[in-house]
Amino acid sequence: MLWYMRYLMSLTGAFFLFYFGLQPLSELFEENLPPDQNLEITLINTSQCHLVGRKSPPPITRTHENVVRLQCNKAQVLFTDTRSDGNYLMPSQIFEVLWCKYWLYTPQDWNMEKLLGDGQFNLIPNEQKGFKVGRGRQTVRVLCTSALNETKYHDVLLFLPPPEPDLVPHHESDDKMSVLILGIDSLSHMVFLRNFPFLNGLLDYLPHSKITGYSRVGLGAYENIMALLSGRSIDELDPDWQNPENESESASRGETKGPHFLWEKFKAAGYRTAYGEDTAQSFAGRTERWRFNRKFPEFNLHPIMLKMDRHTRYSIDIREMIHCTGGREFGDVLRDFISSLVPHFKQRLFFSFFWESQGVKEYYEFSRSLDVAYLMLLKRLEDENILNKTLVVLVSGHGLRKGNYRMSYQGMQEESQPLLIAIYPEWLKAKYPRAIANLETNTRRLVTPYDLHETLQDMLDLDHQLKDFNLQKRMRDLESRAGKNMPRGISLFLPIPDARTCDMAGIPSLFCFCRDLTEVPTDDGLVVRCSRFLVKSINQLLKPYPKCEELKLHMVLLAYFVDFGEESFIYELKLRVKTLPGEGVFEGTVRLTDRMHLTSPVNRISRYLSRSTCVQEPYIRTMCHCRE
Ligand SMILES: *[C@@H]1O[C@H](CO)[C@@H](O)[C@H](O)[C@H]1NC(C)=O
Ligand SMILES: *[C@@H]1O[C@H](CO)[C@@H](O)[C@H](O)[C@H]1NC(C)=O
Ligand SMILES: *[C@@H]1O[C@H](CO)[C@@H](O)[C@H](O)[C@H]1NC(C)=O
Ligand SMILES: *[C@@H]1O[C@H](CO)[C@@H](O)[C@H](O)[C@H]1NC(C)=O
Image 1 (tube, rainbow, N blue to C red):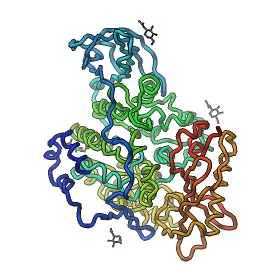
Image 2 (image 1 turned 180 degrees about the vertical axis):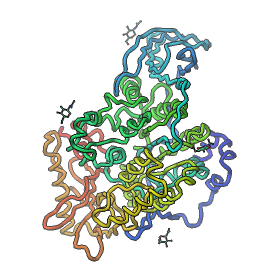
Image 3 (image 1 turned 135 degrees about the vertical axis):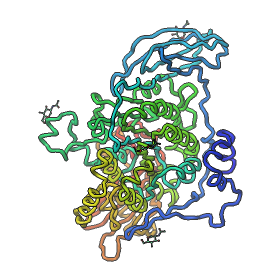
Image 4 (image 1 turned 90 degrees about the horizontal axis):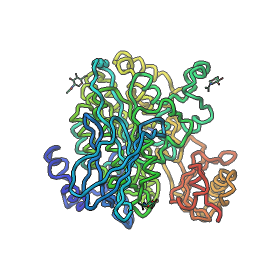
């Protein structure tokens, strides 16, 4: 830890220390850890659920390479500069004459750009002159070769000029706020506390709520993001999907039936939208039915990512999961994109969604390298006064899902406790004191992406939803709905009931750590029977995919009895099994009533990439061992 902090310090300079006050950071430099190393913090504290998180990680074997120090190893030969008279490519570090060809694009569709034209130029050492390539919002792909016809530079660059000044000033009402969702994949709350000391230091100076009781409701980022954006689980989304653009359909079937992504709602309310991920394998690309094609976000990184992925991508880690273009990581490209949007954020109301996954998804240590980047981003937003009219949601879908870290009990628990932090302006507290007080109370309650969905929906009409008078009415209404009538998603501006259980919140058994778990011997007869059932269920799912081999139970690795309380007759086991061929490690929950059934999706916790390329369906892919 210590060497890393020093390394970072030299990187960022002492500037930050003085800027944010020495106090909180200096503690991190103490050589001696506090006497109580296993210091715990309370994540959830309700009558139904008490959960703590440990400040220190479980002992894990280190990865072979130091991923925090990995860097793109090609030169960034060109930079972009947008000036009032057009877009310029600015050369840097030119050591030999290069012949460059470029292709110029403009946004066209959700996943496509239109080719505007192409051209050529030469780069000569020590000549700093820029090349004008066009104007406005454009993407340019550049390929430069040496005299020997070797490719020296291949990159995709984005021009995103600031907006034209508004001729007619926009009078957006005071109570309207932008929403900025900053997602970091596979980041649990506890890992955030460990790996983001600088960002945590900045948070001390911003009004915010750390919702430590945030729980996932689905396996992967995709499932949890969809729950956040639609208020529905994956199973609920697909069967009754309808075209959100087909208004006659929506009207005839009634408001409640359509998917109604937050995206569409904010757009309908006059917000601009922006979307970006640091990968071409984006979650939005996973469903054709997402239907961005007509109402694609005004500011969309996806087609640019696709272009980088196709033409200029290379990897820097052994698992080939961290990608670069030119001298930049894909993550840098995403953050540059967000940065370029800052002048736009200043001018108009925005609903934006960004998701960073490369590296963090694979390596425990990697998120440390994001600390300073996100610190700078938030600092910039604060300096530009954007935080004064924006709700920033720092969020993840789940914790780390694979590897040695995940094998420990703590790793298993943290997988289900993703990060959720809401950052809001000071005036919100003064204007809606009760709503913010509820939000604070909810930080230690059992919270899900469904709740976050409802919360963001409230942002569409703050005054109506959060004014004390209206809020009290909503609170009384919530109180009157006991037990089964309790809605699954509840806005975080309302008090989440203390008595909420995982079932009420829509959290599948496998992701619920509120119930006591008792480890039971793996050779117990019932444990073995349930484990066989788990593997049989996997094979059932694999049946429609003849390219996948049938799996056999090799070993029961772990078994827990799930305690539902004394009055309950539910008998449920949480199991970890290893199967053959392929030695896949899976977790699942099996419930015994008059028959056996699964109460959660099956969770693959060992790596599988190269062995499952014969199927496309992501969930099946985690289970499939392709035939030779
Ligand atoms: C948990 O909640 C109880 C009752 O509301 C309270 O007395 C106790 O101090 C809380 N514990 C923590 C660690 O917050
Ligand atoms: C350079 O190499 C590419 C393929 O690598 C080839 O298509 C192109 O014709 C070559 N150009 C010259 C001038 O030799
Ligand atoms: C819209 O929905 C109606 C009613 O379900 C259907 O008849 C029509 O074909 C749909 N239009 C489009 C463009 O999908
Ligand atoms: C922040 O927003 C509030 C409410 O719109 C406004 O009253 C206040 O002046 C703003 N503060 C700054 C520093 O712009």
